[in-house]
Length: 178
Image 1: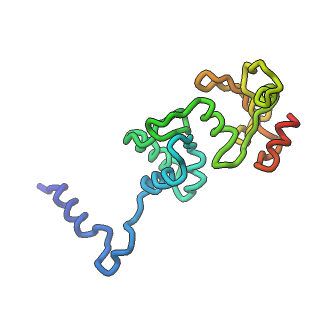
Image 2 (image 1 turned 180 degrees about the horizontal axis):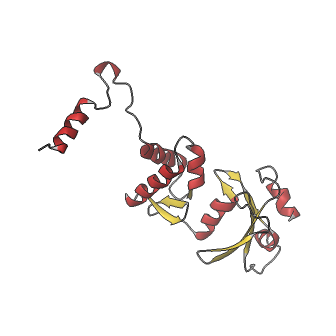
Image 3 (image 1 turned 180 degrees about the vertical axis):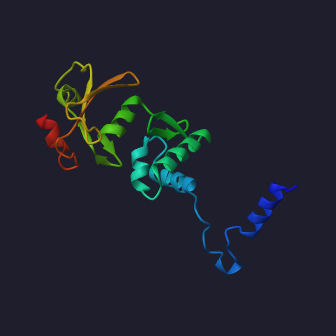
């Protein structure tokens, strides 16, 4: 009978990163999981929302399936926790529902991708004292300009797509015009 564990052990020893003493300064090949994990650790602080779209955009050489699988492994290993589909944070992070909404639809990676509109904008400016029933948001993330209703952690949202791409330079003007 063939002992597979002995064969596997010999192969690992024989081909261990194929690095000899002359090339000790060469890093071993990095796995997709460690590449994604290192990117997350270098990109996000402890109490920040991690969005799968950002990971996919920064790691275009890795398939979406591998990214999702890797995030599942990181959740299983208690490195991160899943807040909702496509949204994560570090394990034991203190993330509020408002922070998730802001990171998902209004500002990502220090750049504006959306803004509060209508009564939500007036309330945020202090021009209105009564809190609106729904938080109205216009965002690059949403494709439907007529908007869609969404509930997240007790927050009622109305999210609209924008006719114009929202940027750091134009979000304030667009918010006032809405």
